[in-house]
Image (cartoon, rainbow, N blue to C red):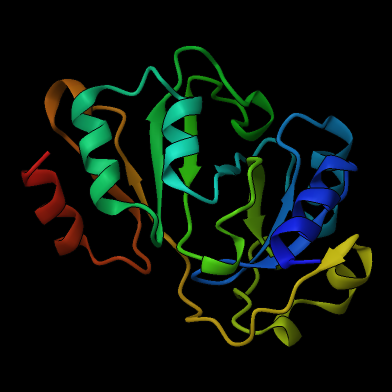
Length: 199
């Protein structure tokens, strides 16, 4: 069974998986399962009021699931994703509320560039596979043993770049063409600035 099929099976069963993204190792679970989300947060020791991101493994399903994304923002996403960027989008329909923390009107979206997982057809709630506030995991061995033991599936993707995704706030991009870096990371600000000029 392929890694993509194993991950889909784990998510469908309500499990929590350790998986390789294009930046660092992550944890994933079904975004609409309160029990799975609670387990993921407990594994990390993450406060339950901190938001996570919803991850799709290809851009087309992400855009289809969020049809309210405006044309300007959509063009920018097509230039940036898949890749090492997490974008914050307006979420007026309050989709994926378990991922949104205290602000259901903001959604974090991530589409990694991971060829071996591109056929995963379901979205996941995703966070990094490290204790809350701890160092990011570049290798599977860097993921704490307690997290690996507590997960239902562990996928080894070898050594990863080790720099987390750049978090970009695009909530004002559609109307005002404004954006800002919330967390510097894998994708440099200059690349985002260049992509935004053509969107």
